Image (cartoon, rainbow, N blue to C red; front, top):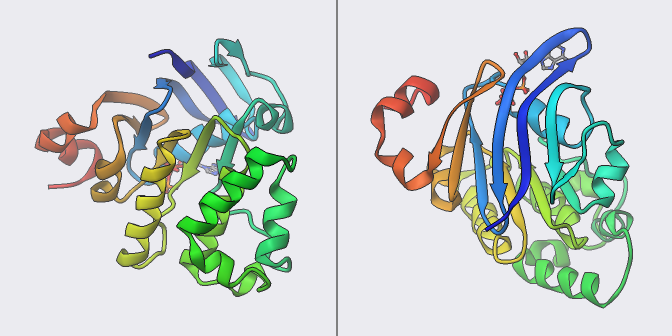
Length: 235
Ligand SMILES: Nc1ncnc2c1ncn2[C@@H]1O[C@H](COP(=O)(O)OP(=O)(O)OP(=O)(O)O)[C@@H](O)[C@H]1O
């Protein structure tokens, strides 16, 4: 399988601070790649840097073999990379339907089919189609955020901590939906909930203090108590 996204020795700043020192990872097409690490390790900054939202000051980033370093966020989005930020990025004053329509880059048979597929997966969004985004529950907001990114024919989705602040039963639903999306879209997932991440991830990278320090198949990590304890504090 070809590598869809590849970061080699990426360095990135937030303002004058050097936050990412050496991020290297490869995302194969059709897989879920999970970025793990303690709070403050640099996972969100990595996703933001891929999207061009933080200045990349070193290393390379390629998507389908082409450099995306130094492109503007909208140019990166136009290449087919969707981003679901940690704060979800939905419009609170717009209804669910309006949020979806604003997100759609174009309306054609394919986006219509994707919209139908995602609404079948999240019937609450259909039910609350005319409700303002700000009035949805935490889980429904997350479903809307994921749906907005999915509805375009993005080939790669970057999803930042979709389980954050959600009740366990809702987390399961969201993770199940990501699992189903995997059939059609390549995914990079930042997730603190290891149980959930390990259930849907194919491969993992651990980020520690702005560097990728470990990688492998998720199945192997589940068995590696030393690594789990050392970098994730899981015993
Ligand atoms: N606006 C900012 N100015 C300065 N430093 C920042 C800023 N935002 C984040 N940082 C720092 O950058 C580092 C990486 O943060 P980042 O949000 O990428 O971590 P993370 O791994 O996603 O953590 P979490 O799981 O807590 O969200 C942290 O040390 C954080 O304090």
